Length: 409
Image 1: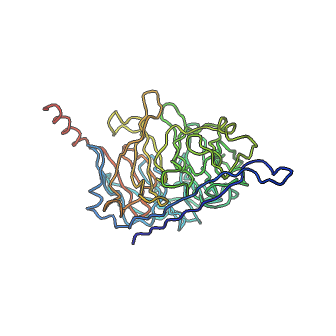
Image 2: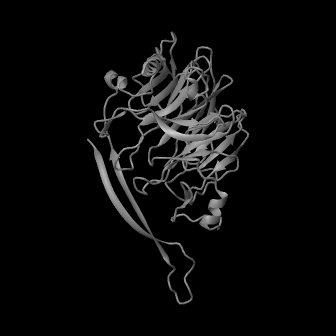
Image 3: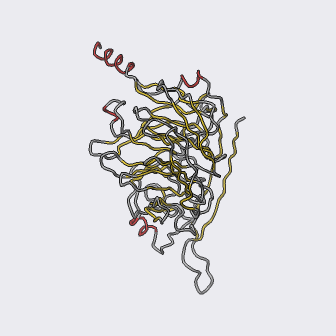
């Protein structure tokens, strides 16, 4: 059944200075909080529905693996082996397409620790992030793992955003995203709502960037080596606010949360802890380069480094929009492309794979989650709602036909 709930909370927030000697209350700032909850009806990902997914001409979308239990984050090895986490059961599963026909034959559990989520591979080792713990395990020749070794056990406590993610940068360093514990609040732990740079020997870490509410997907541009990520906007500000933020994440940068949202808008409930005015704080914060429809929930981000896709896709980024719950009309439930220009700067979002929303957007049969690029250049996309990993590949057949048709016209 469809679940729909609408509520409106009007709050008066006292944001001025202290009361005067005559005990006149400070001037109040009216602030309206509204929100909708709408969850599309869940449908199974049947072969017919998967074949109905829409991608640009020349691309095909197929089921790489099915029957998985809530596949969440992905990591792909140089030999094509894929590792996928299940954050509820805390498992990591090895998936292998041995005959390279675009469909996996092997699905084997290789690790289990409570709340495992983020995965990253480097130098024959798999790094696995839980809520407060970071583990590493040797990858054996057969793809199985040695006994996980704990590197850290004191990451920030869980809260609203407990799903840690991992990526190795071009500098060889490991980066770990720590989401905020709340929708909007002043955090007590200075490592909450940050991106951390981690030493893989367990000897320490530091805050690389802060003011990031929940940046699950992040990656480095292949040529400029600039780091980009998509940050989740604050909930309960209405259907169209706060939009998701596409940021260039710079070392030492502050991205505004919770005091500044989107493109410089003040959030009245959280004045800057620094004592700055909103204007002063905004001048020091880093604003997003692009904004995307509110509540779409970006989860995975990967740059195209392969040779399979046409040249026009070279070094563009692909993002999974997991799908909304906090708006009246669903947003997300798709994969989008971020176009970059020849100078390596982001220009715009555009749809890449759509069609998971059906029946006039009242139902869905998939929620794209993690996204990685396989050694052959195809994209692999997990769906933690329906137990599927999709493969998005370029065949070129439709593209060539379209070109011939255009030439004849």
